[in-house]
Image 1 (cartoon, rainbow, N blue to C red):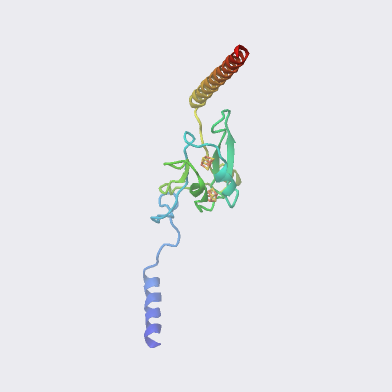
Image 2: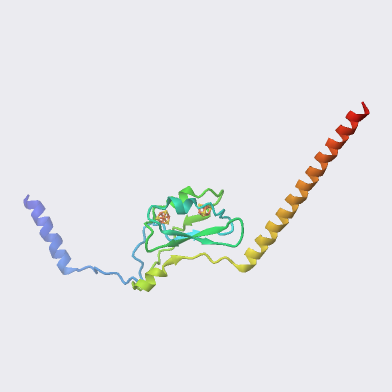
Amino acid sequence: MLFQMSEKIIRVLKGVKEPRRAVNDFVTESAHKSAIFRGRHEVRYDICTGCDACNKICPVDAIKMKPLPIKRPNKVPEVSLSICIFCGLCEDVCPTKPEKAIKLSGGDINMITEGTEDALDNFWVRVDVPEEWIEEKKREEEEKARKKAEMMAKKKAEAEAKKKAEAEKGEEK
Ligand code: SF4
Ligand code: SF4
């Protein structure tokens, strides 16, 4: 008992003698430096399928899907960091392999806003999809659709020719 009390007194005296800073300079020193800190999200629009699974599983509705004018992906996720609780479920559920189209980067620890309502509204992981990439995807999709239509037409013609040949064979008998 006496030992514990003297230990506390020593601790208090030490604290008074060598006060520690209670507040970090958050601009120059990041508050979180844990090795397991998950960091803000990275979104790979080029491998995302637009499946919406990350959005559906998010427990706090921090994800909004940004629409794109192509078929796949027809939307990509954007994350509000002022709502996100960094649970990582969006990354876990993302089906793309071998890389996840959405993942917590682990490294980015500087997530500072001015704290105003406007700043919080803009505190998002935005996905900028280049116009050239969208145009290229559109061309690929058109080419794919054209090839599919050609193949269908060919199959249909072959089936009709086969049917005709069988009918002619039947008439000969
Ligand atoms: S980490 Fe969790 S809370 Fe944040 S966006 Fe992903 S699912 Fe939602
Ligand atoms: S990031 Fe992953 S889970 Fe989310 S829409 Fe894209 S593919 Fe689906």
